[in-house]
Amino acid sequence: MSTTTSDDEETGTKKRYKRRKVAIFFAYCGVGYQGMQKNPGAKTIEGDLEEALYVSGAVPEQDRGVPKRYDWARSARTDKGVSAVGQVVSGRFYIDPPGLVDRLNSNLPSQIRIFGYKRVTASFNAKKFCDRRRYVYLIPVFALDPSCHRDRETVMASLGSGNELVKCLECSERGRKVVGLVGNRKQNLELEAVDVEAGISSNRDSGVTEDVEVSLSKGDDNHLNEESGNDNKGGMNCKTGLETVIPVQEEGTPLNGESVNNSDILEEEKVNGEDKPTNGSRFCYGEKERERFNKILKCFVGTHNFHNFTTRTKAEDPAARRYIISFNANTTLVVEGVEFVKCEVVGQSFMLHQIRKMIGLAVAIMRNCAPESLIDEALQQDVNINVPTAPEVGLYLDECFFTSYNQKWKDHEELSMKAYEKEADEFKMKYIYSHIASTEQKEGTVALWLHSLNHRNYPDLRVINEEAIPNNKSADPKEAITDNKSADPEDATTKNKGADLKEAITDNKSADPEVVTE
Image (cartoon, rainbow, N blue to C red; front, side, top):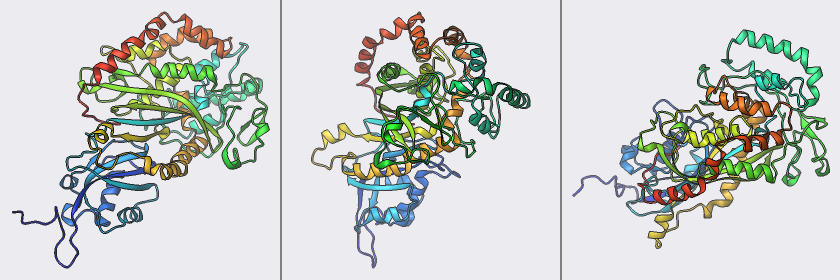
């Protein structure tokens, strides 16, 4: 007979309570945190949550800081700066007396919110019983415009053509504040200052601007595909490239700090808070763009070797093989005047940076920096390619699914976010969406990252760009996209992927569901 009562009940003058195995549903905004998983010396979501569980009475004193003693498990690990709306953890906690959710929220910062908990079986494990995870990445519409925020080489090559590009003054200002510029720092800045003064008057009317490429990582110029935008500072409002076709905002939300009439949205765009006529081509995420972007994302669907889309995982490692169930970008939304494309990806599990690298390569292809066939090459086990990594700010975990568990244990509470949808939507709009939009407005994180998509940072794209860019110099961007599609000799490989993907999906269903998530 056990001599302790910590696992089952509290003795003494206190009322006795039993520990219960539960799944806790919660959300958080990842800004300021070094990720979900607890890490010594780092501020993490798990660290704050474990302490709140102890202070709230869900974990006894002797188990404080030792999560293994109460069967702690998480459904997904999120990286630094990544948020979550439908995160789930499980463990054996004291859920009585009533009011545990309120006690936990009172002991947590406002950017971490507990929605509720549900009783589960004694063998339940939030990681092992999670069938699928759905992540969402919000990418600004302007990022998909081939003529927006281009690299210096493309801007210089366009001079004298019928479709001249201009340098980004806003991005130039921000770039000077980022530590670690590419190449010779002093010379680059001096040349940029001369180029801007000499050429801005003649190139002002092209409508899209560009400037010096910047390294978005901390101090390492050769690894621009690492964490992006963490050191970017500056209060200038970089709206260059915002599209004129923008859905009407709810409740008359002001656009760029000014009131906007719905009838004026299609006639002009706001740049830095001022009305400027829209010159040159207008990029809109319409049916053609949506169809093309979805076609690109669909190339990732199925079971593939994603060793080029993560770090520290070798190609021959079985963990590099992952199963993507679906990947699409069918909807757009406007937050604080910025229009975003909502990219939803569902998979069994994801590796570190995998989703951000898939988005990075997809955006590079949309911007005609690479053909679609590059995805096929990057998914080959014997090929090593340096893949761009999109900034972390636009990514969040949307929901974790427990389909098999729910089907097997129908007499238990269903594990899903259905009961918390309203709270989750409110939290998402208040903390996650607003943070993503405000960060782009104030720091231009994505805009600066777009400037890094060039030959110097990604030499693996050099041959591809030499084939694609000449068609872009004098032609309309839409025509260039069409030319690239038909000119690429490897397109036939992409078109024939459908049959292979079905076989890969079927073969993978029987695979071990043990996962390591992003």
